[in-house]
Amino acid sequence: MRMLTRRMFLMLLAAGLVFATSPPTPHAAAAVERSARVTILQLNDLYDIVGVDKGKRGGLARVATLRDRIAKESPDAVLVLAGDFLSPSTMS
Image 1 (cartoon, rainbow, N blue to C red):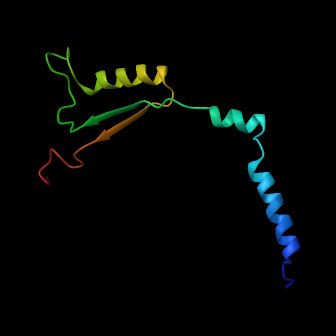
Image 2 (cartoon, rainbow, N blue to C red):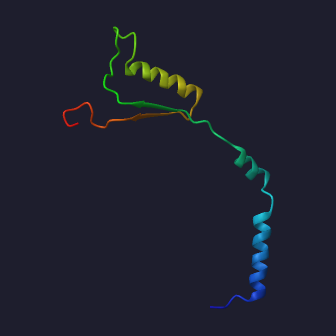
């Protein structure tokens, strides 16, 4: 294996510094400026999935409608069902 001479090392170091400190290309600069809006709809501790007051309030059907409306406004919307994994069950 050939050893790296001091001169070659300094040349590689200088080339690396020039490359590392060079301004980004317009394409790379545009990629850095991009951003995304993410909407997170989180539900916790669901115990009743049916509506109340004869279906006029609550229920997962209304949650699905809300989720669809949010997904149209923000395509990066995420629905998360958090909270109890087994509850309400006899195991919890």
